[in-house]
Length: 117
Image (tube, rainbow, N blue to C red; front, side):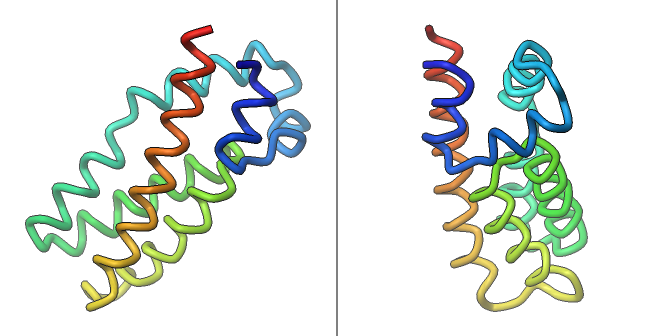
């Protein structure tokens, strides 16, 4: 799978991120680094522990990374979760996290498929 196909599979903005990074080689480097990012795992742990402050920080970090790398679907869902956690641990955070988790797993699967080729 090529980088552009990876972005199509994850619902990302390939053209937008390429206009900023200017090189597929550079973009691929950051995509592969994302696989080692612990923001999602830390978010999951913070939510399980009802640690609103840490959950907010991790959701916000995931949102920022997703925006910078053009992961549109993951950005949208992590943005919604970030806002839900901004001032308190809202009741709908669990449902919003489920959407983030699905989008995260889809993103990781697309990057992993690209890496395998």
